[in-house]
Structures are given as C-alpha cells and as structure tokens.
Amino acid sequence: MSIHHPLRRRSLLAGATAAAALGATAACGDDAPAGTADDPVEISFEWWGDDARAEVTKQAVDLFMQKNKGVKVQTNFADYPAYWEGLTGRMASRDLPDVFQMDYPRLRQFGANGMLLPLDGVVATDDFRDGVLDTAKLDGQLLAVPVGSNMFGLIYRPDWFEEHGITPPEAGYTWEDYGNLITQTTTALGEGKWGGSDWASSYLLMELWLRQQGGAFYAEDAASLAFTKDQLVEWWSSSAALVSSGAMPPPGVAAEATAPGVAGGVMATELRWDTAMSGYWESVAESGGTLALAPPPSADPANLALHLRPSVQFVIGANSEAPKESAKLIEFLLSDPEAAAILGTNRGIPSTKTGLDSVEIDEASQVVLDYEATVEQYLIEAPVVPPAAAGAIEAKFTEIYGQVQYGEMTPAQAADLFFTEAETLFASEQ
Image (cartoon, rainbow, N blue to C red; front, side, top):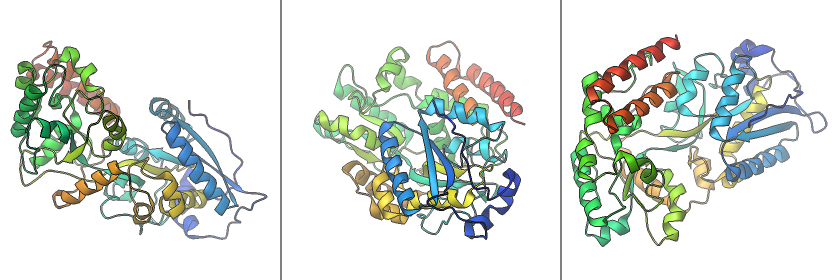
C-alpha cells in the first residue's frame, strides 16, 4: 500500500490557494530561504509501478539529492490499484504528495477540483519534444508534464507472417482489411492461436475509430458522450462475424487467450499503445520469435487519428508548501542526462529532447521510435482530456459489451443501457 509520511517542510507558501497563485513566482526564484544540507526542505514523491521501476526511480532521486543538498525527498510507491485508492482517499483532506505520478485519464478528476498546481512558469518546458505537452493541459492551463509518450500501433509477429506468406499491413488499410487479415492468419496458424482479438471490447479503439471519422468519444466540455447510439451499435456489431466464424477467440476463452496476447504466443496481432512492445520483447525473443509495429486500421485512409499520448505524467499537489523544490525534482528527473540515463525507457519513450538523447535505446524502443517516425505525418490534435467519470464510464463500456459477447443482450439493447449508465455517471460528477 502507498503510505503517506508526515514531513517537516520549510514553509514556502501557506495553503493550497496561495500555492496555486504564487507557484510560478516561487519556481522562478524568490526571497524565501533555501534549504541546506543540515536543514533541507523536505518533499514527498509517490508513483505506481513494480520493483524495477522503484529501483531506477530511487537511484535517480538519490542522484538528485546528491546534486541538491538542500532538498530531501521521501519516496513511496505502490501497485496501480492501491496507489489510486490511497490518493483518491486523500483528496478530501487535500493531503496529496508534493510530486506524484498521474495517469492521463485521471487528470481532470484531480485538476478540475483544484488539487493540482498549475505548472506554467513553474516547470521549465523548453526541452520537451514537439507535441507531447498537448495532453498536459486542462482548460488552457498546464497541469502536468509527460514523462514518456506513446501512440497506437499494431504489434504483430513478422516471423509468423513470413512463415505463412502473409503480407503485413501498410498505412491506409481499413478495419475490414484488418478483419480479413485476422481471418487469414487464424486459418494459417491453426488451433489455439488467433490472428487477433475482439476489438469491439475496447473503448479506446472505438475512440480511435470515431476520431478517424471526424468524431469523438467525449464532447469538448467532457460533460457528455459525443457519439450516437447507432454508432455504438455499429461498433459493437463490427467484430461479431469474426467471432462467430472462429477467426477471433470465442468469449468463453477470450479472457484466457487475450491475457498473454502476442507476448504469450497465442495472438499474431494486437492493437495497443506502441510502448507495450518493450514489455513483450523479451518473452517473444526467448521463444525465438520477433516483433514489429504497423499503423492501426482506419475508417479513413487519409486519417489514422494518431496522437502522442503520455504514458505517465508528473504533477505537483496544490497543497505543496515547496513548489520550487518540487519543480526542481521534476525538471531533474526529465532533463538531467544522468537521471534520464538511469530511468531509461521504464516510463516510455522520454518526453524531453535531453532524455531521448541520454537513454540507451534498446531494440524494442528502437522499433517504437522507427514506427513513430513513419506515422508522424498522420498525427492530429489529441482528444479532450477525459471526464472525471471516465474510469467508471469505461468500466461500464467493457462490462456491458460483455453481455453482448455472451448473447445476453443485443447490441441495441446494450447501447440503450450504456447511455443510461453513462448519463447517471456524468450527473454524479456535477
């Protein structure tokens, strides 16, 4: 579990309101006394992740403290569910860490409630790669900075394709083309393996499909859905023929089959964020296989609707009494060459130019970088920051589609239910 440590801090600002109002001044330098090695300013830093992430993060933080003797950093981490359970519970008392790791879909939940310190003029942004800050803003304010970035791609097994004489897809292929590719590959691979999994279960893929047609999943004010019931019925019906034909795994085995996916040697293709490649690489290589990336299918060959998405973000709590030191820690982790080299690509492809120049790019990350260079021409503006209710809405999307998969509801009945549930969830956030 994520545990909050009470910290003795040198009080730079009094209260969350003052922190938000004066954060930029504090970060740019003020007359408040700085910490010393004997009497350091103490800040807290928390993140989610596994032991490997914790090890490299603590190494980078230790380096920061070596180079900044007047700052002491208390670190904590937890797995994803425990991390968010702890932070959500601490929102009411405004007892958030000075610096903490943010998941993009939760940015509005924290930012719209005044829980995050605006970072314009607080954290230097001149070193960030083009486009990566687009998803860090809410209502025009910079509330987060991305640590790494990724975009959608089709992860696939080129060794299987070559073995069976299957041509990999190229930019501009349609969802129907992808369905045909899945059918061809499933037939070639034989029992127990599939060309791909049921895309209709993913709200993220539906969002991609909508944006390829000029639409969106959420309205611009993030207060409602931006698509129709007919569009949802169409999406939830789009893969039915592939499932019934056996080209995709049936619902009874889909959960078991898709959990290991491409990494487990049971799927030839998988539509995912491209940096998932790094997590798959070793297990596939150990079995003698190879991995590659191709663009996702599109409803419009001229519009793949790709955008850079933050893998994770760093934010500063509005309650922080040490915004200057908190900003300094963030800048160091993202733009100090030694720190960037330590962190590597653990949180995705580095979002800063210095970070990207400093890390050792492994084979998997190089494949990701090469892929992103080939689709750069297709990048469009990022979608609106998801609503505070996004987590619950997206869980309902998956839950209700499950009833379609098992024949308990028709797509039309399920769409009616989803819209009713979403309306209730939106209302609960007002």
